Length: 437
Ligand code: NAD
Image 1 (cartoon, rainbow, N blue to C red):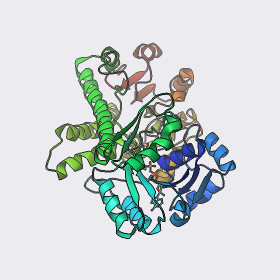
Image 2: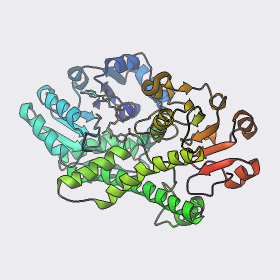
Image 3: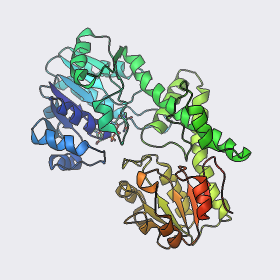
Image 4: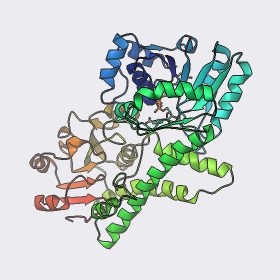
């Protein structure tokens, strides 16, 4: 099948590459000339495990191409995917300008029956808006389908190739048939393609993300309570997570959720409810808890240093909003770096993949280390913000020898309390006993 994917970011590039992998003829379109130049030269502008293998194979075999021209990209395509940004506006609502601009143009471009599929996360009613806008200029029949994407950065290729479920919102039998044919190779093991109407599909994506964010904020509040009453949130997590009604995943307390999806999608769903004169009270709290959680962590550092970090050197491990990605959008680490530098501390940071992105924000205000131990060079103490595997079993002898003070602030609960006691550290983690003084 000939497919066009408009927008070649985290979602568009993975979508395009994976559809090429199942034999489709895919053209990815992006407005960013530099990005397209890189992609054409065989360079992948993002870090996503395993994407390079599929990318190389499919570009070499001519099934995956790139262009900046929308006209050229959609020429002859049976399906056009929109994988465009939907960033939060000032009021938290999802900004639809990228989607609507492209929709308007597509109306004048398509020359035969086309299925226009929205993969971006968009507020309820967007498919109708896209349908309307396209209809202004379109001279041929078309259908607008909502197909929200559930891939997770860091395991995006695996998620896309073997989705737990595919959600497709369409009331058109013709579009349903096309979508079934396209996704058939991805659900051979029996995972469902769930068909529904467009509006329900749009809400489904927000409901899923908002629920996961709620789980995190809930556990962060449990952690805060654990600290006050001398309980241990990790033990509580194990105790409650084994209840299958609750489930083991997404119960980890930490410095709050970040990334390009949870913060913006929770805000957007809250905004949608407001627009319809409904106050979504739980979501308001979820957002508040998340913002406060980052501050609590920074305040612990400040408290330890009696509100004076000036002249201190801080080693920071982990900058990406989660492991296995270079994405730093709304990352708790970015907030923390801001607070640390503003307080007069010098920062030596290390992250396996995200340093280039952070450099674009902080430039030379921060030292970017060559590896995790280089970050400790001359540092007073260590702060851990992202749970990359390489931070899980570090060489503590080396850490002890390098840090001026044996002090670790761990925003991801990587180490056992017993071990840190044995090693004689001051160790603050989330929702557990603080060791040392
Ligand atoms: P992104 O910012 O990584 O990529 C968007 C791309 O679109 C960029 O490369 C940009 O240059 C391009 N673009 C902008 N305007 C364009 C235009 N007019 N024509 C062609 N290209 C244009 O964004 P993303 O993370 O891939 O997210 C895209 C959508 O998917 C969002 O709605 C997001 O919420 C949703 N989503 C993201 C994830 C994720 O993990 N990142 C997961 C599921 C859903």
